[in-house]
Length: 295
Image (cartoon, rainbow, N blue to C red; front, top):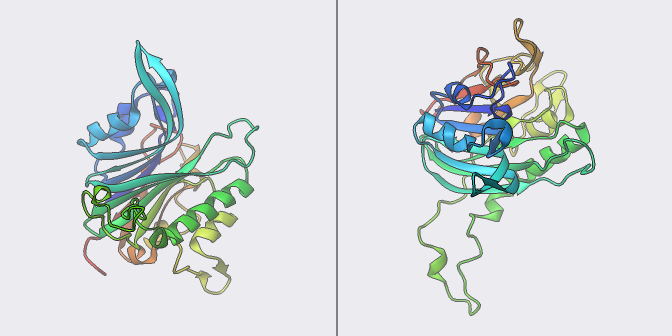
């Protein structure tokens, strides 16, 4: 199972040209995709629904669009929603979804746009998995720490929160109300994947919060109720795998885009690579392949 995360910078490539077909081309072969900075019906990107366009290009993939910015707009006399945010695309049906909005630390600052965490529960060949995609703040470590903490709390309380219709099946008189349960939902799975442009490097505090502290003697101390970096689970060094380049020729910069997974899924990581050749965004996609056979 191939999972890819990509901050697509609303389809604007390294050359400044908007080309959503070029973006989609970089994602061919992925089974599950997490997008950040995806938009719909903005003048700058040609007034197209980018997520739907990419899903069609991949082969009519299932989609959840976790828009964190949503504004009314009229395009050629047609009412639209001008949107910006995260998305999950999947080869397999998305059973349930929800989006959690992050509070703003500094709403008066430039580029302090609304951000959030989008969840999609998907029945995959590895079993039912909660898939999260997010775009943490680029403004400061304090805000990224807040986003990381809220993400970790959302993951840890997932089972206790229950499925999206939890608490709705009982009437005021204590009787079951079948109208809320048109089809049975699976139990909330313990397995989860978190991916996105998280805007921190492995040396930063939010990385340690999500993946565990570093011991001088034993290396990264994995949290059983947290996440594992699939890049290192595949045998790569934390300091490698840069995804935001200062120099396209040397492909050096910093690593701020990640695919993290719960420990059970991390054991099934087969490989993790940065897709270095595409110039469809200012970021590079990251791809992790999970083996479908149990370890």
